[in-house]
Amino acid sequence: MDCPQEDLPVIHSTQRDVLPPPSEFQELLGSLPTRKDMMNALHYCYNGFWFCEAILEGTTTFQQNFQAQDTDIILVTAPKSGTTWLKSLVFSITCRLQYKISDKNHPLVTTNPHGLIPFFEFLYGDNKSLHMPVGKPRLLATHLPYTLLPESIKTSKCKIIYLCRNPRDTFVSMWHFRKKILLKFDPSWQFPSIEESLERFCEGVSKYGPFWEQILQFWKLSKESPEKVLFLKYEDLKGDIIAQCKNIADYLNCSFSSEEENEGVIEDIAKFCSFEHLSNLEVNKSNEEGNVPLIENNMFFRKGEIGDWKNLLTTSMAEKLDQLVEQKLHGSGLKLN
Ligand code: A3P
Image (cartoon, rainbow, N blue to C red):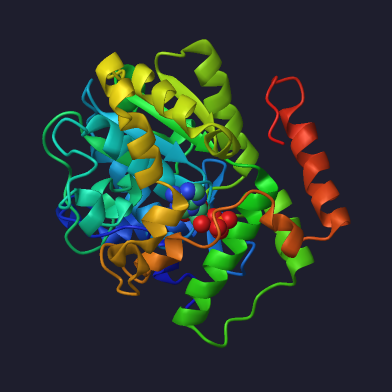
Protein backbone atom coordinates (compact mmCIF):
# COMPACT_ATOMS: atom_id res chain seq x y z
CA MET A 1 0.00 0.00 0.00
CA ASP A 2 1.41 3.36 -0.92
CA CYS A 3 -0.34 5.65 1.43
CA PRO A 4 -0.61 4.34 4.94
CA GLN A 5 -2.94 5.98 7.39
CA GLU A 6 0.24 7.32 8.93
CA ASP A 7 -0.67 10.94 9.02
CA LEU A 8 -3.95 10.61 10.76
CA PRO A 9 -3.03 12.94 13.57
CA VAL A 10 -6.39 12.61 15.07
CA ILE A 11 -8.80 10.67 16.58
CA HIS A 12 -12.15 9.36 15.54
CA SER A 13 -15.16 10.41 13.61
CA THR A 14 -18.88 10.30 13.79
CA GLN A 15 -19.01 11.80 10.32
CA ARG A 16 -18.83 8.62 8.27
CA ASP A 17 -22.39 9.17 7.09
CA VAL A 18 -21.40 12.39 5.34
CA LEU A 19 -18.47 10.94 3.39
CA PRO A 20 -19.02 11.08 -0.38
CA PRO A 21 -20.04 7.80 -1.99
CA PRO A 22 -16.84 5.76 -2.54
CA SER A 23 -17.33 5.75 -6.31
CA GLU A 24 -17.46 9.56 -6.46
CA PHE A 25 -14.32 9.87 -4.40
CA GLN A 26 -12.53 7.19 -6.44
CA GLU A 27 -13.48 9.09 -9.58
CA LEU A 28 -11.95 12.26 -8.14
CA LEU A 29 -8.77 10.39 -7.16
CA GLY A 30 -8.48 8.93 -10.63
CA SER A 31 -8.58 12.40 -12.17
CA LEU A 32 -5.76 13.89 -10.05
CA PRO A 33 -2.03 14.04 -10.81
CA THR A 34 0.00 11.80 -8.52
CA ARG A 35 3.58 11.76 -7.23
CA LYS A 36 5.62 10.14 -4.50
CA ASP A 37 6.10 12.72 -1.78
CA MET A 38 9.21 13.54 0.25
CA MET A 39 8.93 10.18 2.07
CA ASN A 40 7.91 8.11 -0.98
CA ALA A 41 4.21 7.92 -0.08
CA LEU A 42 1.75 8.33 -2.93
CA HIS A 43 0.21 11.80 -3.00
CA TYR A 44 -2.49 13.45 -5.10
CA CYS A 45 -2.43 17.04 -6.27
CA TYR A 46 -5.81 18.58 -5.42
CA ASN A 47 -6.34 22.25 -6.29
CA GLY A 48 -2.61 22.89 -6.21
CA PHE A 49 -1.82 21.09 -2.93
CA TRP A 50 -0.55 17.56 -2.20
CA PHE A 51 -2.50 15.05 -0.12
CA CYS A 52 -2.48 11.35 0.65
CA GLU A 53 -5.76 9.54 -0.02
CA ALA A 54 -7.00 9.36 3.57
CA ILE A 55 -6.54 13.07 4.20
CA LEU A 56 -8.02 14.04 0.87
CA GLU A 57 -11.17 12.07 1.57
CA GLY A 58 -11.68 13.85 4.90
CA THR A 59 -10.83 17.18 3.29
CA THR A 60 -13.42 16.97 0.54
CA THR A 61 -16.10 15.88 3.01
CA PHE A 62 -15.15 18.73 5.33
CA GLN A 63 -15.35 21.22 2.48
CA GLN A 64 -18.82 20.06 1.54
CA ASN A 65 -20.32 19.77 5.00
CA PHE A 66 -18.81 22.08 7.58
CA GLN A 67 -20.75 25.14 8.67
CA ALA A 68 -18.69 27.62 10.64
CA GLN A 69 -20.11 29.57 13.56
CA ASP A 70 -19.06 33.15 14.30
CA THR A 71 -17.60 32.03 17.60
CA ASP A 72 -15.41 29.23 16.22
CA ILE A 73 -11.67 29.42 16.77
CA ILE A 74 -9.68 27.65 14.08
CA LEU A 75 -6.02 26.80 14.50
CA VAL A 76 -4.14 26.41 11.23
CA THR A 77 -0.59 25.11 10.96
CA ALA A 78 1.69 23.36 8.55
CA PRO A 79 2.44 19.84 9.86
CA LYS A 80 5.29 19.80 12.40
CA SER A 81 5.33 23.51 13.03
CA GLY A 82 4.15 23.37 16.64
CA THR A 83 0.47 22.43 16.35
CA THR A 84 0.49 20.40 19.58
CA TRP A 85 1.94 23.37 21.47
CA LEU A 86 -0.54 25.84 19.95
CA LYS A 87 -3.46 23.55 20.77
CA SER A 88 -2.41 23.29 24.40
CA LEU A 89 -1.92 27.06 24.70
CA VAL A 90 -5.21 28.01 23.09
CA PHE A 91 -7.14 25.42 25.08
CA SER A 92 -5.55 26.61 28.34
CA ILE A 93 -6.13 30.28 27.56
CA THR A 94 -9.71 30.06 26.34
CA CYS A 95 -10.88 27.56 28.96
CA ARG A 96 -9.03 29.07 31.93
CA LEU A 97 -12.15 30.10 33.82
CA GLN A 98 -13.62 26.62 33.50
CA TYR A 99 -10.37 24.74 34.15
CA LYS A 100 -7.75 26.29 36.39
CA ILE A 101 -4.32 25.34 35.17
CA SER A 102 -3.42 24.15 38.68
CA ASP A 103 -6.36 21.74 38.66
CA LYS A 104 -5.15 18.14 38.97
CA ASN A 105 -7.96 17.11 36.66
CA HIS A 106 -7.25 19.69 33.98
CA PRO A 107 -8.21 18.08 30.62
CA LEU A 108 -4.64 18.52 29.36
CA VAL A 109 -3.40 16.33 32.21
CA THR A 110 -5.44 13.41 31.01
CA THR A 111 -5.81 14.05 27.28
CA ASN A 112 -3.28 14.71 24.54
CA PRO A 113 -3.91 18.19 23.02
CA HIS A 114 -5.00 16.55 19.76
CA GLY A 115 -7.78 14.82 21.67
CA LEU A 116 -9.15 18.18 22.79
CA ILE A 117 -8.91 20.09 19.52
CA PRO A 118 -9.58 17.84 16.52
CA PHE A 119 -8.35 18.36 12.98
CA PHE A 120 -11.17 18.81 10.48
CA GLU A 121 -9.56 16.45 7.98
CA PHE A 122 -9.82 13.61 10.50
CA LEU A 123 -13.07 14.67 12.08
CA TYR A 124 -14.63 14.26 8.65
CA GLY A 125 -12.54 11.25 7.70
CA ASP A 126 -13.17 7.56 8.02
CA ASN A 127 -11.83 7.17 11.54
CA LYS A 128 -13.50 5.97 14.68
CA SER A 129 -15.41 8.23 16.99
CA LEU A 130 -14.13 11.78 16.87
CA HIS A 131 -16.77 14.27 17.90
CA MET A 132 -17.40 17.79 16.77
CA PRO A 133 -16.84 19.93 19.87
CA VAL A 134 -20.00 21.28 21.45
CA GLY A 135 -20.43 24.57 23.29
CA LYS A 136 -18.88 27.89 22.43
CA PRO A 137 -16.33 28.67 21.29
CA ARG A 138 -15.63 25.49 19.35
CA LEU A 139 -11.89 24.89 19.09
CA LEU A 140 -10.93 23.23 15.81
CA ALA A 141 -7.80 22.73 13.76
CA THR A 142 -6.56 22.04 10.27
CA HIS A 143 -3.42 21.88 8.15
CA LEU A 144 -5.31 23.07 5.06
CA PRO A 145 -4.41 26.20 3.11
CA TYR A 146 -6.88 29.10 3.15
CA THR A 147 -8.00 28.50 -0.43
CA LEU A 148 -9.26 25.03 0.49
CA LEU A 149 -11.27 26.08 3.54
CA PRO A 150 -15.08 26.00 3.23
CA GLU A 151 -16.78 29.28 2.37
CA SER A 152 -18.49 29.52 5.75
CA ILE A 153 -15.10 29.88 7.46
CA LYS A 154 -14.26 32.74 5.14
CA THR A 155 -17.59 34.55 5.41
CA SER A 156 -18.34 34.04 9.11
CA LYS A 157 -16.70 36.01 11.91
CA CYS A 158 -14.81 32.97 13.18
CA LYS A 159 -11.20 33.60 14.07
CA ILE A 160 -8.11 31.90 12.70
CA ILE A 161 -4.77 31.53 14.44
CA TYR A 162 -1.99 30.54 12.07
CA LEU A 163 1.35 29.17 13.27
CA CYS A 164 4.39 28.54 11.09
CA ARG A 165 7.98 27.51 11.76
CA ASN A 166 11.33 27.89 10.10
CA PRO A 167 11.21 25.50 7.09
CA ARG A 168 14.57 23.91 7.96
CA ASP A 169 13.32 22.73 11.36
CA THR A 170 9.88 21.91 9.95
CA PHE A 171 11.41 19.69 7.30
CA VAL A 172 13.63 17.88 9.80
CA SER A 173 10.79 17.43 12.29
CA MET A 174 8.59 16.05 9.51
CA TRP A 175 11.30 13.73 8.28
CA HIS A 176 11.76 12.15 11.74
CA PHE A 177 8.04 11.96 12.46
CA ARG A 178 7.03 10.34 9.23
CA LYS A 179 10.00 8.01 9.17
CA LYS A 180 8.91 6.64 12.52
CA ILE A 181 5.31 6.19 11.44
CA LEU A 182 6.10 4.67 8.06
CA LEU A 183 8.53 2.18 9.59
CA LYS A 184 5.92 1.20 12.11
CA PHE A 185 3.48 0.65 9.29
CA ASP A 186 6.00 -1.15 7.08
CA PRO A 187 9.48 -1.97 8.45
CA SER A 188 10.79 -2.42 4.91
CA TRP A 189 9.59 1.02 3.70
CA GLN A 190 12.05 2.46 1.15
CA PHE A 191 12.82 6.11 1.86
CA PRO A 192 14.40 8.53 -0.56
CA SER A 193 17.84 9.84 0.38
CA ILE A 194 17.76 12.94 2.53
CA GLU A 195 18.88 15.00 -0.51
CA GLU A 196 16.03 13.62 -2.61
CA SER A 197 13.57 14.10 0.22
CA LEU A 198 14.58 17.76 0.56
CA GLU A 199 14.40 18.15 -3.21
CA ARG A 200 10.76 17.01 -3.20
CA PHE A 201 9.98 19.26 -0.22
CA CYS A 202 11.42 22.16 -2.24
CA GLU A 203 9.26 21.14 -5.20
CA GLY A 204 6.27 21.39 -2.89
CA VAL A 205 5.57 17.65 -2.82
CA SER A 206 5.12 17.19 0.90
CA LYS A 207 2.01 16.72 2.98
CA TYR A 208 -0.25 19.74 2.33
CA GLY A 209 2.58 21.29 0.30
CA PRO A 210 3.80 23.51 -1.27
CA PHE A 211 4.54 24.70 2.25
CA TRP A 212 5.31 28.29 1.20
CA GLU A 213 1.94 28.73 -0.52
CA GLN A 214 0.08 28.02 2.70
CA ILE A 215 2.33 30.34 4.72
CA LEU A 216 1.93 33.16 2.19
CA GLN A 217 -1.84 32.82 2.04
CA PHE A 218 -2.22 33.27 5.78
CA TRP A 219 0.50 35.93 5.97
CA LYS A 220 -1.27 38.09 3.38
CA LEU A 221 -4.64 37.57 5.02
CA SER A 222 -3.26 38.49 8.44
CA LYS A 223 -2.08 41.80 6.95
CA GLU A 224 -5.37 42.49 5.14
CA SER A 225 -7.68 41.31 7.94
CA PRO A 226 -5.86 41.24 11.27
CA GLU A 227 -9.18 40.61 13.05
CA LYS A 228 -9.58 37.38 11.03
CA VAL A 229 -6.06 35.91 11.18
CA LEU A 230 -3.43 36.09 13.88
CA PHE A 231 -0.09 35.07 12.36
CA LEU A 232 2.40 33.47 14.75
CA LYS A 233 5.86 31.95 14.45
CA TYR A 234 7.16 29.01 16.50
CA GLU A 235 10.39 30.91 17.06
CA ASP A 236 8.51 33.91 18.52
CA LEU A 237 6.69 31.60 20.95
CA LYS A 238 10.08 30.26 22.00
CA GLY A 239 11.47 33.79 22.25
CA ASP A 240 8.79 35.29 24.52
CA ILE A 241 5.97 32.95 25.39
CA ILE A 242 4.43 35.34 27.92
CA ALA A 243 4.06 38.10 25.32
CA GLN A 244 2.65 35.59 22.83
CA CYS A 245 0.10 34.22 25.34
CA LYS A 246 -1.11 37.80 25.87
CA ASN A 247 -1.16 38.32 22.12
CA ILE A 248 -3.34 35.22 21.67
CA ALA A 249 -5.68 36.17 24.51
CA ASP A 250 -6.07 39.77 23.24
CA TYR A 251 -6.78 38.55 19.72
CA LEU A 252 -9.43 36.14 20.99
CA ASN A 253 -11.05 38.90 23.07
CA CYS A 254 -10.27 37.15 26.33
CA SER A 255 -7.39 39.31 27.55
CA PHE A 256 -5.79 38.50 30.88
CA SER A 257 -7.02 40.80 33.64
CA SER A 258 -4.51 42.66 35.80
CA GLU A 259 -5.48 40.34 38.69
CA GLU A 260 -4.62 37.36 36.55
CA GLU A 261 -1.33 38.94 35.53
CA ASN A 262 -0.50 39.65 39.18
CA GLU A 263 -1.40 36.12 40.20
CA GLY A 264 0.98 34.72 37.56
CA VAL A 265 -1.73 32.99 35.51
CA ILE A 266 0.11 33.63 32.24
CA GLU A 267 3.37 32.20 33.60
CA ASP A 268 1.48 29.16 34.88
CA ILE A 269 -0.09 28.53 31.48
CA ALA A 270 3.23 29.01 29.69
CA LYS A 271 4.95 26.61 32.07
CA PHE A 272 2.17 24.05 31.87
CA CYS A 273 2.29 24.07 28.06
CA SER A 274 6.08 24.02 27.84
CA PHE A 275 7.72 21.13 26.03
CA GLU A 276 9.32 19.96 29.27
CA HIS A 277 6.04 19.81 31.18
CA LEU A 278 3.70 18.57 28.46
CA SER A 279 6.06 15.88 27.18
CA ASN A 280 6.49 14.52 30.72
CA LEU A 281 2.81 14.07 31.46
CA GLU A 282 1.91 10.38 31.60
CA VAL A 283 -0.69 10.78 28.86
CA ASN A 284 1.88 12.25 26.50
CA LYS A 285 4.65 9.80 27.40
CA SER A 286 2.30 7.00 26.57
CA ASN A 287 2.89 4.88 23.52
CA GLU A 288 -0.79 4.17 23.28
CA GLU A 289 -2.42 5.28 20.11
CA GLY A 290 -5.05 7.00 22.22
CA ASN A 291 -6.78 9.72 20.32
CA VAL A 292 -4.75 9.40 17.18
CA PRO A 293 -4.97 6.17 15.24
CA LEU A 294 -1.53 4.81 14.40
CA ILE A 295 0.19 7.76 16.06
CA GLU A 296 1.31 7.27 19.62
CA ASN A 297 0.82 10.29 21.85
CA ASN A 298 4.55 10.53 22.55
CA MET A 299 5.33 10.95 18.86
CA PHE A 300 4.18 14.56 18.97
CA PHE A 301 7.07 15.39 21.28
CA ARG A 302 10.60 14.95 20.01
CA LYS A 303 13.07 17.73 20.91
CA GLY A 304 11.07 20.95 20.72
CA GLU A 305 14.15 23.02 19.90
CA ILE A 306 15.15 25.65 17.40
CA GLY A 307 18.02 24.64 15.12
CA ASP A 308 17.86 20.85 15.22
CA TRP A 309 18.13 20.97 11.40
CA LYS A 310 21.91 21.08 11.91
CA ASN A 311 21.84 17.42 12.94
CA LEU A 312 20.35 16.27 9.64
CA LEU A 313 21.01 18.82 6.91
CA THR A 314 24.38 19.89 5.54
CA THR A 315 25.07 23.61 5.22
CA SER A 316 24.61 23.42 1.46
CA MET A 317 21.24 21.67 1.82
CA ALA A 318 20.11 24.34 4.29
CA GLU A 319 21.30 27.09 1.96
CA LYS A 320 19.38 25.57 -0.91
CA LEU A 321 16.20 25.59 1.17
CA ASP A 322 16.88 29.15 2.35
CA GLN A 323 17.29 30.33 -1.24
CA LEU A 324 13.99 28.78 -2.23
CA VAL A 325 12.23 30.35 0.75
CA GLU A 326 13.76 33.74 0.03
CA GLN A 327 12.68 33.55 -3.58
CA LYS A 328 9.12 32.45 -2.72
CA LEU A 329 8.64 35.04 0.03
CA HIS A 330 10.26 37.85 -1.92
CA GLY A 331 8.22 41.03 -1.74
CA SER A 332 5.85 39.70 0.92
CA GLY A 333 7.61 41.36 3.85
CA LEU A 334 7.74 38.03 5.67
CA LYS A 335 10.99 36.58 7.01
CA LEU A 336 11.14 33.07 8.36
CA ASN A 337 14.65 32.90 9.81
P1 A3P B 1 10.68 18.59 16.79
O1 A3P B 1 10.42 17.40 15.93
O2 A3P B 1 11.60 19.59 16.13
O3 A3P B 1 11.10 18.25 18.16
P2 A3P B 1 3.35 19.43 15.51
O4 A3P B 1 2.77 19.60 16.86
O5 A3P B 1 2.88 20.47 14.53
O6 A3P B 1 3.23 18.04 15.03
O7 A3P B 1 4.90 19.76 15.65
C1 A3P B 1 5.73 18.91 16.37
C2 A3P B 1 6.98 19.66 16.74
O8 A3P B 1 6.69 20.55 17.83
C3 A3P B 1 8.07 18.72 17.25
O9 A3P B 1 9.30 19.37 16.94
C4 A3P B 1 7.78 18.71 18.73
O10 A3P B 1 8.85 18.25 19.52
C5 A3P B 1 7.47 20.17 18.97
N1 A3P B 1 6.68 20.41 20.18
C6 A3P B 1 5.66 19.67 20.68
N2 A3P B 1 5.19 20.21 21.80
C7 A3P B 1 5.92 21.33 22.02
C8 A3P B 1 5.91 22.32 23.07
N3 A3P B 1 5.06 22.25 24.07
N4 A3P B 1 6.80 23.31 22.98
C9 A3P B 1 7.68 23.40 21.93
N5 A3P B 1 7.74 22.49 20.94
C10 A3P B 1 6.87 21.46 20.98
